[in-house]
Length: 84
Image (cartoon, rainbow, N blue to C red; front, side, top):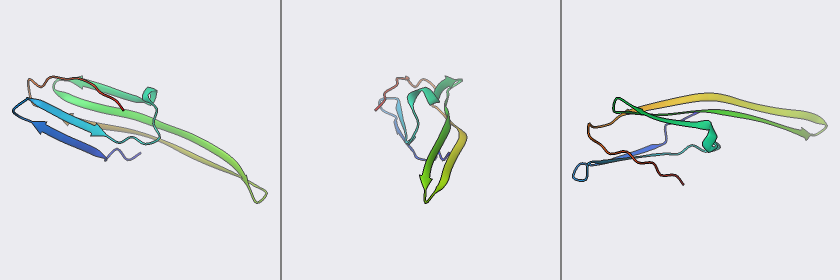
C-alpha cells in the first residue's frame, strides 16, 4: 500500500502541526494512530479479495499489504484528531 499521500503543515505562531493522509480503500478499523515521544505514527493494513466470472473463467484478485509512516513532531505541539 502506498501511504505517500501526505500533506503536512506547521503553524509556528499557533504551535499547531496538521497532517492529512489519503488512505483510499481503508476503513477506520484498519488504521492505527499513535503518538509516542513526539513521533506521530500512522499504520494500517489492506486486505481485499474480489471474485468474479468473466468469459466463463473465475477471476480472483487479492491485495494485501501493510504500511507505517512516522513523523517527528516539534516539542510542545498540542494533539487533536479529526476525521472526514
